[in-house]
Length: 207
Image (tube, rainbow, N blue to C red; front, side):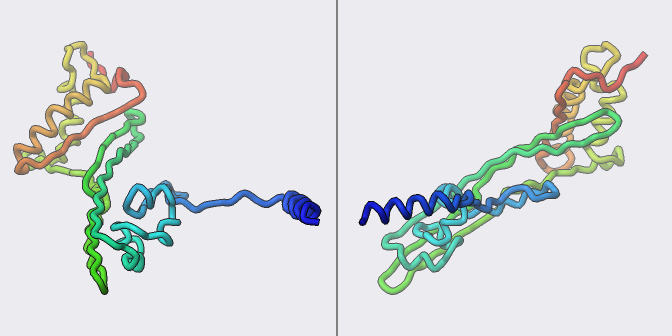
């Protein structure tokens, strides 16, 4: 009888043909905007949104404070994040990519359970994707714009062949923009770069 019941349940389950399980994950939306406000901690990211229900370490101070009540000993959680992103521009020179890397301490928490309560503090910060723009007062231009234009006019022609390539303009602004920015703006850091699928492509040619 048990075997018959087991076979019946097995056949019934297969006949239902259940649909695949789906999960909602954070990522770029339909407009290409990336809002990945992930919960801190490697475990939380590996488990997706399921960690909210578990919440059994120091990161729960942010994720789900109710989980602090199950901690039995002091815990510290530290998270360091890094990422790369590319800004693409399309103009008369073609398609140009501007790469940037960002990193930093994104989360820090401390939980200390006592007999009747749990004391917890945390600091959570998103990666700073701020683009630095510096003004060149004497030239009345943005720092990048001024040196990019100057390079196209021949300033970036490092080998004297009357041509300015993508690689030459990248080296030219990479040498001049950071130096002048630090000089005029109290050691501010601005490190632009220009990337292209063909770095040997000629942007300007002179007779």
